[in-house]
Amino acid sequence: MNSHRTNLIIAFFLGALTVLGYAPFYLFPIPILALALLFRAWRKSGTAREAARLGFFFGLGFFGAGVSWIYVSLHDFGAMPMPIAVLVTLLFCAYLALFPALAGGLLKKINPRHPALWALCIAALWMFAECLRGMLFTGFPWLAVGYTQVPTSYLSGYAPVVGVYGVSFVLAIAAALMCLWFELGFRALRVVLPFSAIFIVGFGLQQIAWTQPTGEPVSVSLLQGNISQDSKWRKDRIVHSMETYAKLVEESRGQIIIAPETALPMFHDEVPAAYLARLSGHARQYDSDLLIGMAEYAPTGSGSEYYNAMFSLGVSGEQKYRKHHLVPFGEFVPLRPLLGWIVSILHIPMSDFSRGGLDQQPLSLAGQKVAVDICYEDVFGEEIIRQLPAATLLVNVSNDAWFGRSIGPQQHLQISQTRALETGRYMLRATNTGVTAIIDERGVVVQEAAVFVATALHGNAQGRGGATPYVRWGNLPVLLLAGLIVLLSVALRFRRAR
Image (tube, rainbow, N blue to C red; front, side, top):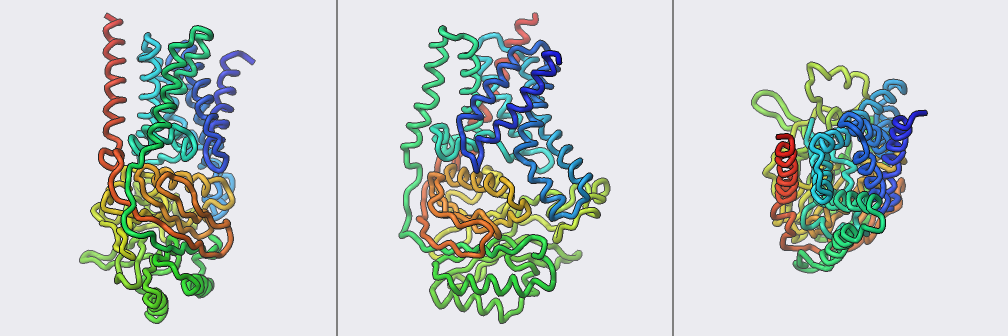
């Protein structure tokens, strides 16, 4: 086996190894080491094509190990035939692998000579590749490497300042410096000092309280019905779902009671009025508000629209939030004339939703301003901050039963931890099968329910006010900085070429 093939195989396994940095493993040093070794391989590669191949094989291992739960959604619950589900999963991972390939190829094309500029340029290109992946075709920012540092690593201190992409940028700088450390050996003091400084600054940032408590803590009850995905939408199981959540509601005394996404598998106007009155009556009896998921049918002048929505019942009156960022093929069909055939081989109910508005405001519940996001929306930090700093609490409701007993739900929990840390707000997660949890403003899980159990998680949450730098500025500062680094690198490249 020649050395080039060996390097590709090593890159593949480095990518797979990187997944150990994410939940449920939380081995945050591993991604720094894995990227350092990948960057070393890029530095030694002879051509841009070779660097791109290394990045592609790293991506195949990374996404193949990290998002293999896509297969569970397609085959186990979407009823896609196994060979097609395997093929679609592989093609999806290959598409995602194009982004680290792009970063490697561009780095070799620009090829900064100065080690410090090379380290900054590689970090900027890595982050831009993640951002691009998070935007194209509605975006798939899952597994941005910044998530691996939350909540324990000192690098997580950067999250309230520059967000998860900024953490990815800083992590990639640390990995590039480690790469240079390997190269310089005993002459590496000029690398060790800035490498250490990155972590020292991160530790210092962790000591800052970016937001302040507002009002008294509120009691919360987070409901987890544990309705199996293969029976959730069956008509003969609807009564079971309704009774499961009615029982959980009536056993709860929280000031805010939260049931998950589409807890009631039917349209809001189809739910018996007596049932809604029963839930609302319980909430009012205990001076509470209930937030519960249902689909919404909304007639329009030209037809009708359907929304994935959350409705509130109780002392604060009925309010609702409509999901804006929809999942391709799961909730809407992109490029329907070309790709509509995919839906015909999937058995996914409610796969043609409309988007909720961008200007939706936090819901007023139990004296708090609650910013709601539904399932996949939690992955887009730049969208979550639209309801801030007005919101005092964050809520994510989800149905991660689509991912079965894979690592997907645990990864989603870590994403929610990052949103809490970025915004300096408590995050309340209510899910169908898990992971249901209360997360504090530092991204730490303070209470967590057992998965795949019908239960209610009871606890307290502290509303918080104020704004982190990330809430105020979003991704703009780190994008501008990274853009300037790349422009400088390109300018020097053309200057050398003259």
